[in-house]
Image: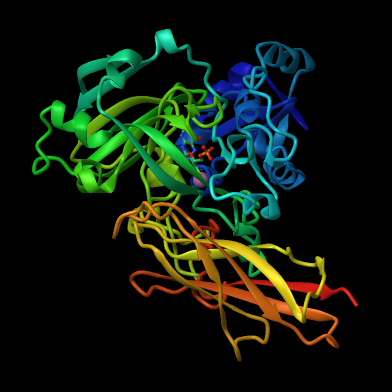
Length: 465
Ligand code: MTE
Ligand code: MO
């Protein structure tokens, strides 16, 4: 294979001249691949004409054999050993100072850190203890000192005010109970239909907590925002990608300014200051809305006519038809996910567990939740493929108001089983206050990003004889 100089590689940084990158000693022509990059063309273009090594240190989820062999298929040559070494010496590990996490979290990705608790642990308590609350980071965790913390308030990009932590805390203190759920929760089940791209979450990319902070509507009112002039409230985090772009997302202004929507800039979780992983010192909680909009380590709020232009608002966290493929997908044609659909999961027992029969029955526990403040009104469970449905008992948030039910509901049910059968298949489905119900299977809601995975949860367990 041919050997290139870094200068030669550097000249190939546009579609016209071809797009080359290096990784280790390899030189790769990625011109054709750029538009197909799942993380968006803009992200991969930051490496055009240079080394992708530092990017892959931040987006370390690229370190799979599948992605390495995809890269190798585009190899056109090498750089010299010395050049590869000098590229390497510039590297430092942006994840070197990440917080310590509880061993009970099952890690789905280390850099960035993504982890969830086991299902049975999840339904042990109505409020999820902070150490067991799933973590979904897209970038290294930023380190912020309270005394240095500032929140910028802007209108169409022009800064109007900057609040420090003390000033922020002067606004009226509010507490809500709300579940936060990742748009990819239960993706591992959908991935059985067909290959898709995303972290392989089980049912634990959700947690339920109390969130204390100030109402976003109070801050926007104080800023003199006219709801009729703008359409979206954009948020930015203190976590930055290699080009200095922050994590970002937005919500409709109607949600942000509605006092009944309970959108909170939270500084406490379950009565304690936010932990580093969950957004210390301040994060947005948009109850009833997909996790991705609940921006952590909040650095900036921008009032705008437009949605956030971030990759996570524009080129990710959107739903598609089961027939949409990576070759024909057009992210501009799908709206960004906001309010989540109704969902439930069986958490105890888990698939393939062996369970004991007591008085001819087995006990089954789980959670159910719906977005938009819609309360769970019923959870139906069957162990004969729908011939007989048993209604579960619900543990609910008794303080929640009509139309503002942000918390999850836990449920449990005793299912009568036939002692002679060795194996039982259990299905669960929830119904929300709009009588929305979960779809029966994943095949007709499959999408290439594995989002909105809310089909009936189906598991098989063995009966202890
Ligand atoms: N905010 C910032 N700044 N950076 C992030 O990577 N991840 C989002 C959201 N807010 C993210 C963020 C996603 S996709 C989810 S699901 C939730 O945070 C996860 O919140 P948690 O880690 O507190 O459970
Ligand atoms: Mo997420």
